[in-house]
Length: 178
Figure 1 (spheres, rainbow, N blue to C red):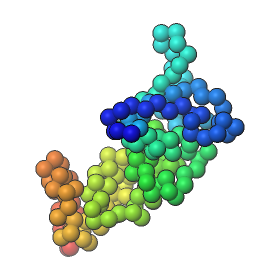
Figure 2 (figure 1 turned 90 degrees about the vertical axis):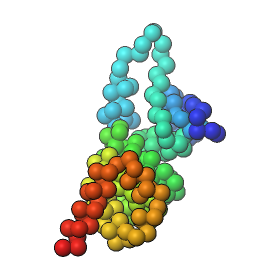
Figure 3 (figure 1 turned 90 degrees about the horizontal axis):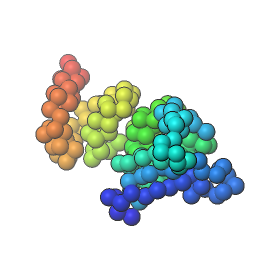
């Protein structure tokens, strides 16, 4: 499926009908039991225009990440494969929809998968999603492997679009040296 198409997934499409109740909401995605107070509030809102259909747009992440997220809301479980494929996306979703247990797990999983290529992107994400442990681990990895990180597209993008973060990283490195 192309990223610019919108796909609609009901909860029943995510697992067999015997595992979940009849869908009471439709989740609109962009790529192909409420544990979350944010989703709970959306579900409790009055339906507009007399329709009984509820649609929650969750755009900007792969459909399969949304499916894994909704499954987590129902059974508090995520597979290693889902974490490996969608950990970063699940981290964002868990932050946006206030699911702290998933956020903690994603933070741990993402930190174990840091590479020279993704560390700057994860650093920015950790800052945006308020994950201080992951943020610090990224700073330490950037410091330890600075010459390699400096050559990545993520670093170059950050230099151009987030000079304050670059300054923060360089100050952190300077303080680590002294």
